[in-house]
Structure formats: C-alpha cells, structure tokens
Image 1 (cartoon, one colour):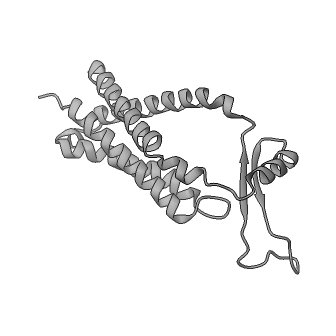
Image 2: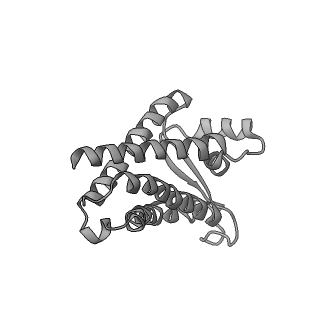
Length: 180
C-alpha cells in the first residue's frame, strides 16, 4: 500500500512539474499576471530602492483629504522579500519540494479515505479537484482586493489551481486503483 501511494504521488508530482513548466514556463501564464511592465521603470525602481530598504509588504496610499482617503484613487501594493535574482534557483527548488510534499499528502489522504471515495476513477479525480477548489479558495481568491490582485487575475489564478489539481488527480487516480 505504501509503495502504491509513493508511486502514485511521484507520478502526480511529475505531472504537476510538467504542468507548471508548460503553463508558466512556455506559455508565460504567471509572468503575464505578476510581471507587468511599468512606465519609467528605471525611475520607479530607483525610487523604490532608495525608499524601501527592509523586506515587507508596503501600501502606497493617496494623500489624505479632510482626514480621509479620496474616493476612486488607486492604492499601490509593493512587496520586497529582501532577495534578488540570485535566489531564483533556490526558490524554484523550494517550490518543487513543496509541490512534492503537497501531492504526496493528497495522495496519502485519498489512499486512506473511505471506500466510497476510492470506488471509481471519477470519484478519485473529484477528490483532487476538491483539493484544488480548497487551495484556490483559501489562497488565490483571498488575494483579491486592496493591495492585491485584480479580480480577473485572482479568478485566473484560482482556475489554474483547480485545473492543475484535476490534471494531477487524473494521473494519481489512474495509478492509485482500489484493491480488488
């Protein structure tokens, strides 16, 4: 049983890695959302570099008028992790390990779930789709709002998460068949 879970989880992780590479690496899905071009980028960069020296998430609000923020004025969100491009390789490795752990836990959860959940291929896939819904609702949808993503981007990120988990589920469900 443990071997089946490990093999199915590993297959799911490979599918997750391929999905991420194709969708984000080749098609540029995430970079189109997270890396929009800024007008006068050099000037903006220098201003941020001169003024934001500690890692953190910052909000840049319009000036107060009559002790309140004016209506329909933008609020900008700036995140600085304290890292530069030199950390990209390490960050990618951490994301790969995190993906492996998440898929292994989900596969183990399915393997130990009640018999009705494991009975059919469709139910096993649905199990992973529900995990995708949970992850999307608890992360991407909650990133919408002031200082966060626009609604369309939050929905696109959530939809990608759900589809990604469903695709992983297709392969895990195929490998993790119930014992006869």
